[in-house]
Every structure is written in C-alpha cells, then in structure tokens.
Length: 207
Image (cartoon, rainbow, N blue to C red):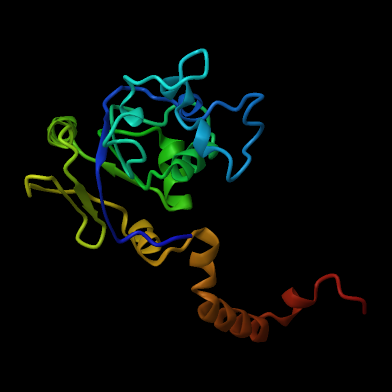
C-alpha cells in the first residue's frame, strides 16, 4: 500500500449529501464484480455521464481544473449504502487520494484506511468554506504528518485520525503489513509460549 504523508492538489467540490457506494461505482454488466484496475473509468459514472454515454459537461469532475482532482470535497454521509470495497478502489483508480466530508458511511470509512485512501472529517461549514476557495482551482494541502488541511488562503484546519490508522497510512501499511511489522514480537512470544506450553504446538501430530 502506498504511504500517505502530504498531498497538494486541486480539490473538486462535490457537496452532495448521501452519495452512496452504488453511485461511486455501480457493479453492473459493464464493470462486472470488483475488477481491479478497470473501475476508474466508471467511478461516479451516473454523475459523470449522460444516459447516452457522453460526459455531462456540468459535472464538476468533467470540468477544468477539477478533472482528475486528487482531493474531493463532499457532503454529509459520503460513501453510505452497501459494504462495497470497490467504491474505494474506484476512487483510487480515478486518482482520488483524499475525501474531505462532514461525515462518512461507517463501512466506507473503514475501507478507506484499509486501502490507503484518507477520509478527513471536518465540520460542514469548514468544508463549505474550503469548497468556496477551491472554486478558483487553487491547491489545497492535506498534511497527515501534522494532521492539518491547508486552504488556498493559508487557513489551517486541524483534523484527527486514530493514531494506529495514521501510523499505518504514513508507513504505507495495510492490516497484513501492520501485522508483519510485529514479526519479531510475534516470534518471541511463540518461542516463550512453546517453552511454557509445548503440548499446544503438537496437537494433531502423529504419536
């Protein structure tokens, strides 16, 4: 998993509430079921494309300078709905590395950390203020080292991330990587435990 430290990018204002995982990526005949590497083109497809398949020029991600933005400024309850990890994959494959919103769907929020996408929770008035500044296309900075969002004006908005998750993102560790980072302690425990309870380690062995 790629580490996340500091990201500077234009931020696409998408201040719609309740954008669910099916809106982020609809698993249908065109996409199949969670095909990694092919989801980016369909990310937010029902919003990006018209019924005839052409781009909707009024949608923010289809307009300069927001096309391909790495930061999305979203509304309340972003990522609600079904427990679809493909929603996070689709955003990443489109190029999004951070979503800032007043609140997130719980499962989507957890899936973000497991895949290296940073969800930042800020109060709704703050997100609206950021969106107003971002309309010019000026860059926003997400600093996970200092846990602060820096607006184009220089205004700094602190945010919080649970310490274990922050460390994992900074080091680029998923759950397996986090476990493997403790390999030395795990081995030491197993050695001590095997000496104290040898019978546990021989269950099922032929006599």
